Length: 438
Ligand code: HSE
Image (tube, rainbow, N blue to C red; front, side, top):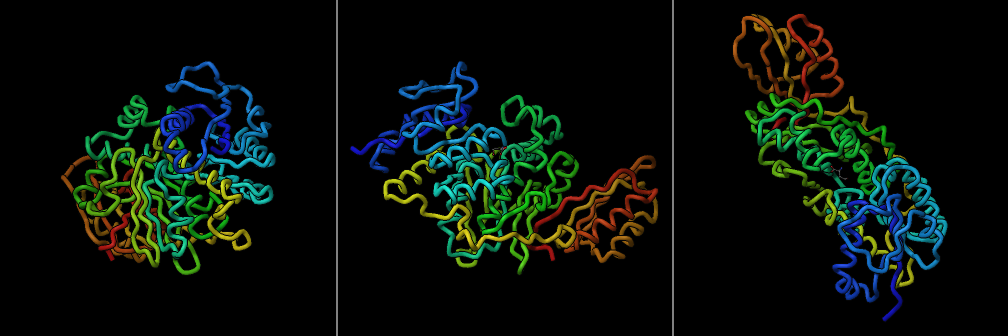
């Protein structure tokens, strides 16, 4: 038997524990597939005392990452500590010491990917990042390898389990956002600080990585339009149901001639849409290639063992390359290094889609015609109207859906409408993706 491949793990939290467990539990299977043992030689974490749900065997547990970074017997470093620093410095140091890297750190790759990938090229090492997007789902490998012959026409994804869990519960149990968020936190489905998840930031990190792989581009995170779910009201979920829609936080990339549309926002989709039945904390990707047509990937976007599965698959990939004497078989961003340039994203104002509006309006003659007049003046054509109840005091909801309209026109029209005396509070806008609407 050939010598084992030694790995160092930095970050012994939930996923790190899963990686150790998986390498223990499936050691024989992995050896049969790789022809060598894959073993963790050392683990570094600031907390060396806390009890984890796995018993260590020969792994050394240390509070000092340098033990791993400076060990010449360690060929691959797994970074699972998250955050920007010291994770970035550790990754760069590992690569400078000619170690391959596996990471799940989407925020780091989305923000500092160019620099990290440049160092990897200079040092001739590989970086595996399958676990950074979609947890266990092999979306990275699918884009880099399985669909490498395709022009990627579009990707529609549910890439954040926390948001999807919250929206699913609001829909199933007719509960308000804050109640569901609190329950999700109590059950461990949401972080104590859920900002990144519920405001779409985590999804933006993932979409930035996916865009780079789809088109071989440098992506500036700030160019991606990003709106989260914290403004979603259960009234809108009920109206969505009445319209045969469901609300999902979608990440959307669409190739439009020379430009790419990339946006993240709560979206109404038809109940029979392939993503409509993706519920709870599951993630899914609907990829359309010009040759492949539709490819649908579905699975756990987070969690100890599902994410560990993706991390260990990267370890196996890198080890297989090492076995063949290759430092990297597949380019990091799927395109040759000299082909990568900056992405041209379509400005959000130029996006054309369908819209749902909920106006809170006083119930008196002429209100509907005033609102529809402003919409018409901005070239926005109404597809349907729902007006419920009659109140002598206060406001009633008026719901409208539109035919395809330009975002800039919609924003201008809503600015005007929101200033009307007969309209109170801000109008709710949710974009609709319904292929049947013109
Ligand atoms: N926080 C993420 C989610 C999982 O809720 O989907 C890790 O990417």
